[in-house]
Length: 391
Image (cartoon, rainbow, N blue to C red; front, top):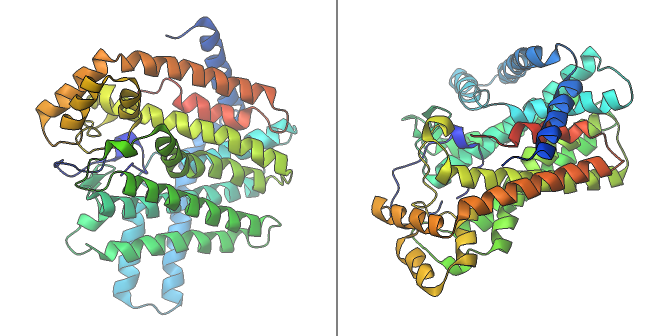
């Protein structure tokens, strides 16, 4: 199934047969605007400090959750387990989703010539960590379903000898912990109910995307008739776009008191495009990225992934080329993988991707700059982080 995490934080089981898985001057100027937007949104000196402060907030949240168990007279072995489980699964990623809430609050405040107060900043960080707890839950479940071996440079949680399928319950606990944190730090806010509803909605959307992914490419079955652009875009929108881009943006909007539904509709439109752009990059990097940079050897071909490249290949290929795909895609065989990659070269899919990348970037810039309901900086920082990324 398609990864919930990012390209460099994921390890996988040894693949097996049938397993489910030019830049113009104008673009240069646009990228410079993005870089400026990211810096302006964060404020002078804030960028270097945020991650340190963000990490300190995690420690407060984690310690608080453990103390809640002690206060509830939880048995000692369960307290120790919960502490270990949180520390193992939550704080070790890039933290881009959580920090995007902080970026977003700064951008929205800056648009009104306001500064972010200390209490507002901490609250944004708490909500950011709620997204990271949700991410941890998704990853624990994802690793079990994908039978992955490593995650973020360490063995997957369920691979711990004393954990195994207890990880399913731990995932549920991780999800519920985000609501405990929301309740503790945000319950008195006018936007509290909206935040809870937002997390519920996005969790459901992500699970829906997961379902399509699982039934499109189940383990042991290669059915290329299911690999349509419609199915692919639905998977990446629901599996990636909503919780990776829309959730941080919408949380920042709620925290800043944005109530205009048109603003949320526009944010949703932009974030969906950002998410699609991000995942298509991910699929491209799996095949064309440098393993030393992306942190792993790509396995999407052998893992039978319904990915952008194979969908493009199926749209472009001749009957004879389709036969090559049918005979070699999703096979745990290096020679089969080489044949698929050779076909991608014959179909010039790298050029197809480069064209898509520039067109999508220009489209995103146009939408961001033409809309008036939200500050451009809310999304500029996100785009700046992913445009031309190498991992």
